[in-house]
Length: 317
Image 1 (spheres, one colour):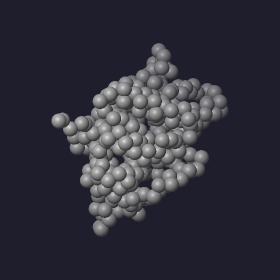
Image 2: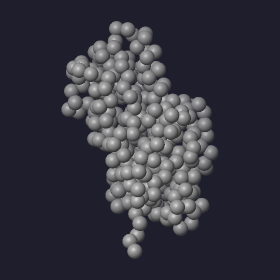
Image 3: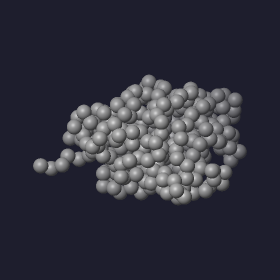
């Protein structure tokens, strides 16, 4: 009898916006429809039902003993590096006998860059790209490596596509904020700007990006500002999640440790080296607590453990 393939577990961030949460749940259903032979479940780290632990329980109740977990996130910040591995380690203790592989976040994959280009085309129409400056707006993080990934996405989006420029801003936790990013575009000579939210689905933060852009535009009528849509449940996103699943199953994980603050002493973040991940608080997300004590190891044998002078920090990039 052939061994069934590992199930697929999708780990989402969570949002207080019900439309955004339902977009995630619908995306998980679409993945299941795409591969009917593959058990698929999805859950959130915070803010939205179902929680990730409930999704694991659902798989276990369906007879699953092996699964691959894919973080449905664009950048590798605290959730992907710490919260999800900690949650999975807890689930392994709750369900003896299960094993799992942990995939990597989506990143600025060429397929997603093509979707972003499409979102820009939807609002640009026949406008000359050479006269358009794009402001790519990420979520924002206290992790400098995560913020740098958004800058990488902006550069890759600019390469070869003919825009006047692609600048970067963040909607929470990191500078520059959206108004400052728009100011920078103008200082660089922009007269026509498209604000492009670097988010998978709708939610409170993408809505905030749009509102801040409209407020800035109202105060600067001499500059044309348009807002593009989020990435959404496009076929490219479905394909990429399955690609990340296959990578995890095969063990083909190309992790980024070169600029990890828990491994390398970066200016201003030297105190992070060797530290275990700790629960954190997003001041811009209406105040919430993860409520899930964070372990330091991920306990699955597939983790990406770093050893720093006696610390074993398995944050599983």
